[in-house]
Image (tube, rainbow, N blue to C red; front, side, top):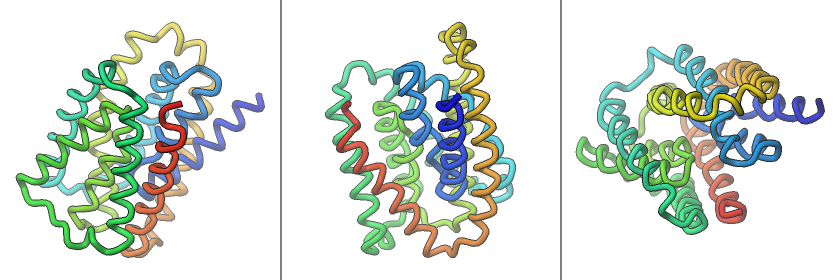
Length: 242
């Protein structure tokens, strides 16, 4: 019972973070779920509340999706993520986590120091950045954060930033969730109270976060994203290979 309450609280926090930054549900919930189930099953279990919270966030922000970024960066990110997922078992997780953490810290520092303001992805660069970030995210298993780091180079308004990141995430969830359900259904069924608790918490957190996003100024928004990326980068450097 205590763990269920802890999971629900983590889900509320995760949903709120994701509604403001465009990512965070998987980053926050997976380590918590893994305390009870192990990492492999945690990834599959978290995919359910992740999909629900992402769909809710997309519905709230659907009018702000940047179609140009979605069709270029988004498609390339999805394809890169698929390739990265296939290669996942052949590469050292510790080495990848280190590279992943360094890249997130670099993106965060680039934004906080103002260097990212000089970066403007063109059409071709968007495809390259999308493919690279998607491949790395697929390898490490955390696509949202690296995708968000790359999206900082597009300089779109905050609502469009979160909406577009959410639309891309929804495509990825739509592809991976049926696989998890088909391959780990028996195990997931036994976890339904925890999955339900995380899902409800994610919905509540998303609702609060969406309201908070409306009050965040554009410049402060980008700094918040950078700080969250920095925290996750440090986490991956210290605990990513554990």
